[in-house]
Length: 313
Image (cartoon, rainbow, N blue to C red; front, side, top):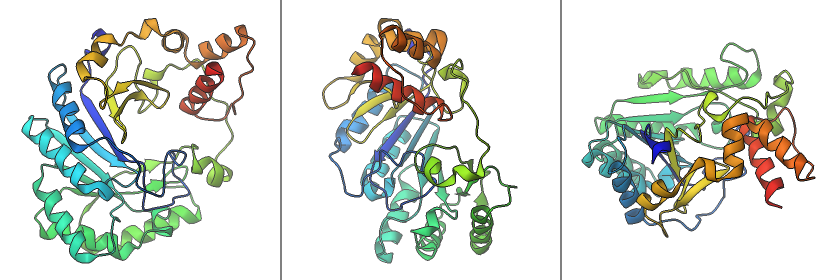
């Protein structure tokens, strides 16, 4: 349990299915176009209840894919989080889960009352290439009519917000179009070259070589594997420390078992990353006469995941 002494956040990737096909998507390799096999609502909410018996959870987030394709699960997770006294309960959505306006209004009403404290709606040039802005606008209007006001438009920027490129210009135009709604705008995300972004947007970025000595806990949005701050629960019930490492599955194991049996020093790959960064994995692969195959300009997480595959061969 020592590795989880500072655990305070649970993230639910509600589904790998998405209603968009975005050129900037960093998890495009995980996304699907059809509904996949998933853990049940009871299994997911029970896992959340169990985690709170062993850690002081302060924040829960639901995202995807497009999480509102499984809006019943989203509402159940946040209702449970509210009952457990978890303070911050967030949803990230692209706002497009159906074309039926009566369904949009009904889902918005359910979201407004289930316990969510804030909703980020992704709006930018990339989402709106395949997602109708009119339906996103109607979704936001429906939330406002249901007296839910803590809404943020959440854009994605190429290089940075100030960079002069066609995508950023279109994103700013879309945000101006939604300005009459009078909802807040977040700082958004600066796109990193992972997944589709690497394929479609590399020309806008200056090539660089990733520093492999950097350790997981030193990177933005990444766990330290021996001081875990958040857990990510996947649609099938896998509980992940990160994309490369999972500690179990809620369909087959209890959360207590997972937390008690996890020991970062008992897994050679995790130990090497913890002590030496991903460079430790590179040297380990070479000692095993394996040839690491990765793009040195990839993100640390992408390189680590690639090395895990090499070492498992």
